[in-house]
Length: 298
Image (cartoon, rainbow, N blue to C red; front, side):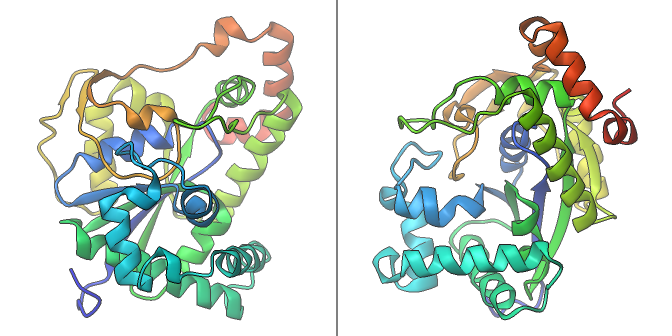
């Protein structure tokens, strides 16, 4: 695929809150022929370029062959980019997008940059569909403003108690001693409400998918999702029941499970039922009760 392609590049944007299973969904989609999961693209300038965090392939971002090629073809090389200026532009674009100013100059400029990067990813791989699991609604709004992209939004949801339990655990970025985001019960509940509300407002026609449904039936859920995305049916030979054979890829940031490959048992992570004190479960449930019911969590 090239920039001159008459067809718009299809981009599947996974929106929602942190710790909702976006890395799992992105990796499953990455196994499909013609699909490429880029991970959390909204972290490109801070974590990947600036901090040189590891690509899914295990190499530091600046040493990954695919991302070296993408950055060379998009900008003339990583060193040719003013990273601080790019981070400032991203910040202005996100702020304007969240305020509903989709026509703001910063949004248009940054949207064109994201489209350029995604088209270069498609040109450097066999991909016809790109999966961006950034989750950030501001990033999604900028993507939707980009010309030449056919952006489909998947609103990935998870029981707020599961999200709160995951956000309450101490984790570090894979391969680095950088702590991942950690929140208490109230902070996690607020994060769950805010990010899901923003995603719902971003794309009222978004495809809603529960993490629990995906974990219970990965093969059936992927077939259903492909149909919703107007994508051709696929033979899911890499899935056998609840086991998926995952090959490595080149996603940016996300859950440390992205560095694991080979057969992987997929099951619903409901450790919160035993790990979370009952008072904490009840607090999170009470703080999220309205939207949780509307999203199917009774």
